[in-house]
Length: 412
Image (cartoon, rainbow, N blue to C red; front, side):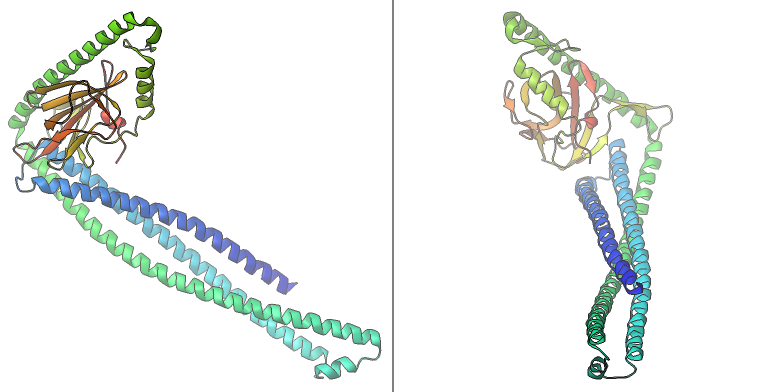
């Protein structure tokens, strides 16, 4: 019975170990995936921010870019910390299993020794042949042969189990040594990344201090930007209203093929309604208007990060990217407006059913009004300002209702 309980325990240990290893492997793979994504994102930051290193221009956009980089670096440190904790838990689990296996191996060897001793005591030192043929009758002979067969099989099983357990124990020890080495490597990596994080924090604080001393200039910039943005929004609203009037006129001519979607003032053909529905269904999944980028200016109204009592407003997002980057349509649609706005440069609007996307701060535009475009299709090239900063201004609208573009594009 003792032997059977030991065997069952060993089998249970094997199964439990394989199950835990499977779960740990999945956790480790997810951590590795997260780490690679963050590291890839940080490379984007480095490539983009290096473009303006020579100018050393202190601006709110620069501060926002550094802050976004700091957040990603902090995520990397957190991910590495999670990896350290995972490895530590693996090491603790391995040490517990090894201790338990060593105990079971000791018990198996002791039990094997007792089996040999009891067998020797039972046949009173006789050889196997003498033990069998010293039987007093046939029935006893049969029973002794049966006993010897069972005894031999039990010894073989016990020996095999000891060998298997010894091998498994050695493998666990190798794995334990490997995980300890892995932990040291991750701890060293974490230390390096924490030092980078501290340096970014200093740079971020330095920018905040510098901006705080330039209050008058910043207020002038904010006022000028606000006027330019108001002009941009008037243009967008006028373009959308013109599209609504065209849709209404078309609906009057073809009432049988046009529909008016609930909650909107824009009648649409079935094709336009399907495109609109598809656009809405891809909220949070749309590609970025540039392949790589940082949100240097977010959407909405919020307090200035360094100047008390000053609020910032933006109806879109400014995405900093690398000079000469291609600007792409985020979804299938039709180009409805191309113009130039002071402070925003070349600008275009794309219609996606009842939805509209706007792209400005372009150096050049490679599409024409009325042209059909596809998602990720190139529509122009980003402009680079005098400070060496390449940014595209991006907005999203549903009819005349403006929306936060960051909620529509994929998270990074």
